[in-house]
Amino acid sequence: MARETARPAAAPRNYPKGERRRAQIIEAAFTAFGQVGYRNASMVQLAAACGVSRAGLLHHFPTKESLLEAVLETRDRQDGEHFLESGALSQDGLAYFAAMIRLVAHNQANPLIVSLFAVLSSEATAADHPARPYFTARYERTRREMQSAVDDLARRGLLRPHADAAHLAADLVAYLDGLQVQWLLSPDTIDMPDHLRGMLRNVISVELP
Amino acid sequence: MARETARPAAAPRNYPKGERRRAQIIEAAFTAFGQVGYRNASMVQLAAACGVSRAGLLHHFPTKESLLEAVLETRDRQDGEHFLESGALSQDGLAYFAAMIRLVAHNQANPLIVSLFAVLSSEATAADHPARPYFTARYERTRREMQSAVDDLARRGLLRPHADAAHLAADLVAYLDGLQVQWLLSPDTIDMPDHLRGMLRNVISVELP
Image 1 (tube, rainbow over the protein chains, first blue to last red):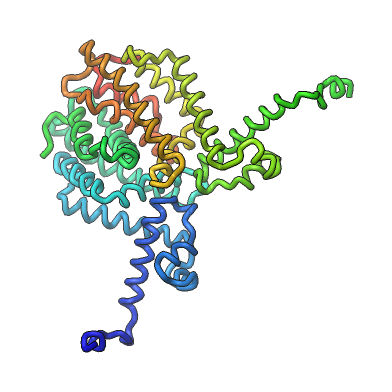
Image 2 (image 1 turned 90 degrees about the vertical axis):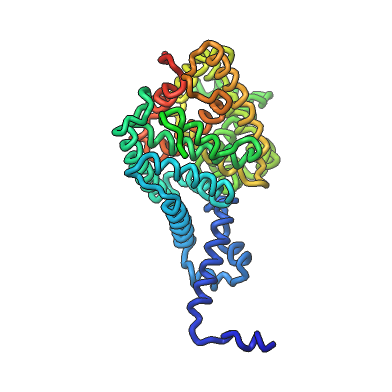
């Protein structure tokens, strides 16, 4: 009891509580979008999963689109932080792809991250999907960043002679996307970091750490 | 008028008409599943799109799952026919991958085929999705078939020395899946047959026709 009263239960500033609630809603949407897709996820069910009323949910996210945006931002931030911590530098091709292997290993331990991206990126290929501009721009950015890493390897003579440097960024991004689907369906058959290492061996002439 | 009366409008056997209606429903579902996903497609909207009542739709497909099954069967049959016509023989690795390039070129001219597969295969990664067993089995079969083609290339010494023959089938299937998503989002940036040819050059030491 002493402990309970010591807590600022009715503290005047409820900002942190609102932030926690917001984070909780994003987390529930993250899971729901990855499991049933954005279009099929229901705001009513999301509210229920978080123990808030529909009005409470709409207070934080007035539209489903705004919640989608928050989920994608969260996903990007987590990915970006993890990738940078892994030492990814697109100017250093070897460091970049070594970090990519570590990121894939990290994602393989977090299926929700993988399924969110696999489900939303495909769903977003529809002409009228609200996340289509986001994914189109995201792929362009990812190809550009990876291209810098590829260009660095080309300059240093670390690409195999037959590798097509102009296509390689799009190709490796494509490969990673498709690998996620097979892994989600057959997690015991596919080991993503192991496969990625093998694929990189096809195009890079030195072994990555 | 003479023409109209000459037509067997009220012919006693309505089987062909029923077959046409069935094909029409499958076609509408093919489009809808590829655009909004299986879960989000509505039987009521599908019926309306085909100009049949809900009861009329349920006469042909008593459940949404049965319609999904028919759509996937149709897709597989079309793919299989086209692939075989292209001369694909998994015992002949070169013929197999040359046919694969032609199949990808064919699909690139038919975005509905591509989006159906991209959307459903990702959606089906959810544990409770009715198409999960289908896609799990389909990927296993595709990997096995492609593995025969890869093994043939290995036997004939046509794989590059660093290529990992044990991973290659899964890797190339993954690559093709991911390429579809980037192409659907940026059809002017990505040319799928061209990219595939380049990717195969990374692992096969002879140029494909």
